[in-house]
Length: 340
Image (cartoon, rainbow, N blue to C red; front, side):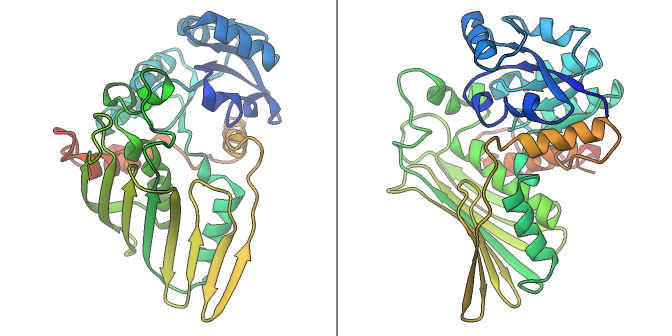
């Protein structure tokens, strides 16, 4: 297998532990250069992680002849622009989630990747995490019989990670012009993307979103009901102005139920009759690493990464409809080839 040479655009908090180290710790992979607009911070990251080069200009990464693939880990507003540049330069692309500000931008990114014949993946890493693969295996093995319904709930207080200080990263996360939305947009997509991986595409969704607490301009609450093309039904509720932190998913089958968390590495719980089985599956130190390894294998012609631009665009389509009434103009683009 050849060694894939990576460049990273953006090296903030997510890249520090969750993703960045995966690009130089995975087999047949090396991190050649990193970029951040604040050059001093890019230099510090490069020093901490023993990366040979750092830049404060993304073009230095995109145009480098010794870089095969680019990981885009910047705020959502810039994903589209960087992806289009990478595609034009013939670089393989891995972009962080959410893939883009909306479904329309996702379609444009997919079109550019196709036109320039480069692969496009998205950082929905739960599709490769062992804990989530165990949930998928339980469903496919028939542990709970035919699946009827899946429900999801995520609550957090305003003092949580999406609280808005006067400035800083948290403020950007709840600025829709930068992040594409608020905490629902940022967090619910992880669950909805994994459910797409588990049950196939959602073919219909009806959602409501609002800002109840008034702490920022973005949405802080949403509910939705949806139907998967496979026949499974689902519902979700997300509230980020609640009294406590709580998050859980329940898959209801004809002969049992499965509880699992999207956000925390707590044991999977399997309910069958009066019996309850706890199944602990730990997350790896760098949760993006299984995803990165699958991308490297695909680039070497030895497999396929399941988190693609196409799959992520389906999740963006669902998110647009979930938040469409809160953000006028979203959720009105029809189904097209990007969702096939």
